[in-house]
Image (cartoon, rainbow, N blue to C red; front, side, top):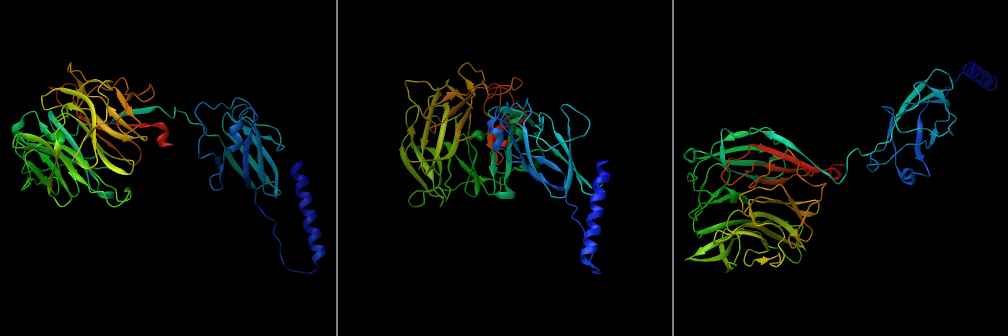
Length: 460
């Protein structure tokens, strides 16, 4: 009946236009726009609902909020829906999936149930032209502060592996993971696998030459400026421009430990350019001192080695703090082969400062920890303690490594994760944290897998 009335009114309008215009041959076509032009929701019991911005996709007919409402938001009662329709829309019908499976006429005023998607069907003045919309309220279905982990890739290396180190090298689309492994049979030499950082699941095996078999401190391998660097147990420094062909570095001192790099971002400097550096501990005629190599590949000496400073088994991190690039080393074994639970930092490679307090143990003495900058904090994934037992605890520092606290129940490793030490760690641009390999004990083989985790809100 309503459709007939609409057709009658439309016909009258057409006749009226014709009589008014006389013999004018110009044809006039009424608009067939039946769109929803604006959409909003509100409810006094859910005050944040009125601030939710909805996107109307006129092509697909979907109405939704791009920024999901907080986890735990309950839409357990009807809400006021305010829409603006095109002027030529005659009727608007709704189907509320939560309470009905049929369309019913809506007067644009009655509240609606949005606990499930709602269907809107607009009908034009001609009684035939329609447009359908599906409107829904997106609510985060996971705890935003929880960290979700899972195995990302398994079975990369061929055979059993005794030691492993992953180095990230390159820039932009050429940035790649370089995974170096030493098999259980040390005489087989070192193996190399490469994958684009943007991928991480497809790996290519490459040849390696020039590294002395069984002598490389694989855990201390690093990249500095435009080359890879590695040190042997005899203190000889090796370098490679492509990660495959290696050779000794001429005129380098005897290296007791390769500590890492001070990576300077040109946009992150105070007054003048802070020089980058490859930091190390140097054996100078039996005396251990700090040393560093600059961009010109010239070595310089620093102060005497501090008592209790780690030389093996430490975790390291290059990071920025207070407008300076810094290098942090955490835990590990000192020159007397004793485990430590301290954190040290430098901004030049010459002088190192102990950050942690001797009177307050920030964490257990251990080695093989993995350290990364994540969520505006420094994360330390525990390693292997004095009893030879690995831990899956995660410690956080909000002040650059001075104070540490055990993470809460939302940022933990899952139960199925095997505690391990000596993993390589990397955080990508999408805020995923990757753990490569690792060992359950000092004498066990490397776990041939990659784990990936992310705090939920960093992916929203």
